[in-house]
Image 1 (cartoon, rainbow, N blue to C red):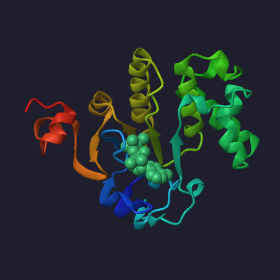
Image 2 (image 1 turned 60 degrees about the vertical axis):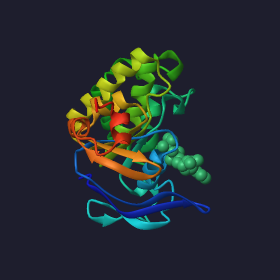
Image 3 (image 1 turned 135 degrees about the vertical axis):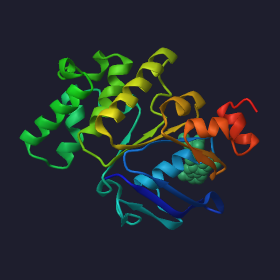
Image 4 (image 1 turned 90 degrees about the horizontal axis):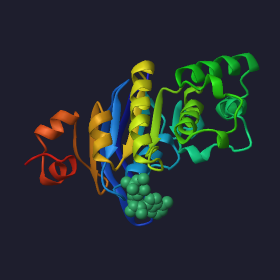
Length: 238
Ligand code: ADP
Ligand code: MG
């Protein structure tokens, strides 16, 4: 579960075509990174997949069904926001449980999922604290916990580490990579940071002005960049 297919997807804002017709397949369980300069359409593409923006044309399939008209909450995906999106007045436990309460799951199921997520993220000892009593890394893990409990078929991350300091960013990259290994769930990760792309991805999608310049493994792109834009962006010695 978690195969995502974009079929001639386009997006315009007014008369501006931000995403020209784009085809892309993301395989089940793959860690895919969308990388490219600021304004190239990374967030728009992720939001189209999440259903937070409507397509201008084309279609998106998840596990074989067309979800183009399906509202975000029904797509089985979880978007990870930055840590500042936590509710400051709620405990960690309540923050993590929040999407499940909204979905009206029963309390026993909520407890089970929250304690599993806390275990995976090493947050078991912090469940009764409030976000303000946590470190930046712990807060980020709570934000991820809130996605995990929904048991999504894919996780969508939009520059989740951009507000963290450099040292913490390195640690959180490892946390997210470890989580991917453990859950084996599809992850799409948006960043403008080449190092993040090169170290975390199974597959990198290099975007420029809404176009896919190249798709491949980090090593493919490093060894065989298709053009000078990709070479420059990936840091190939050519
Ligand atoms: P990235 O995430 O790669 O920095 P975005 O996807 O946020 O890029 O933006 C891609 C382009 O679409 C930019 O030119 C941006 O100004 C434009 N854009 C994004 N959202 C909107 C919107 N709601 N209305 C108009 N233009 C938008
Ligand atoms: Mg963005």
